[in-house]
Length: 177
Image 1 (spheres, helix red, strand yellow):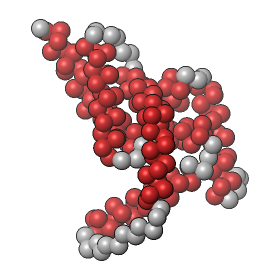
Image 2 (tube, one colour):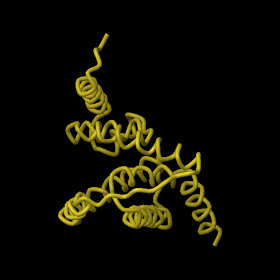
Image 3 (cartoon, rainbow, N blue to C red):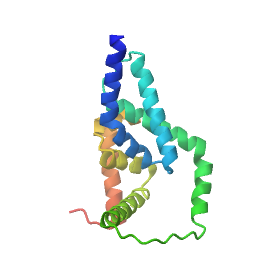
Image 4 (cartoon, rainbow, N blue to C red):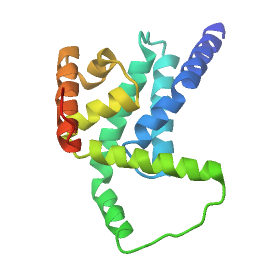
């Protein structure tokens, strides 16, 4: 009974420390709030299964991001045609207009628009580069953590990041001085 309580406490600590990060990671890669919530639930369920079985997890944050990475890939494999159909439906001239009177809401909308602009530029990169940039600068993962999640060397991660930043400079027409 004591071991079960210790595992529950450990899981709760890891969940509280990482739930927002995992949510952001998934939501920056998957559209639809319900899908994101379902995936996050699956990720933590898989983590709970490992913890409840007594597996020793040396780096829980990295372990969670590895699960998340794989779940997102699985989601795309399963839903890609459906996602493309949804994107096409959204482009059929549906216009939304609304007024915002709340200053905080205006600020959040502006930040959201800027974030979408930045993500749009990042999406212009080749997939391996955009993933590296998002993992490093959006998800705040270290190169070592990224290497473990992607099953590549830390040196390969650094090379991807350097190439990605070079491409971003080209896209944004920023001279490297």
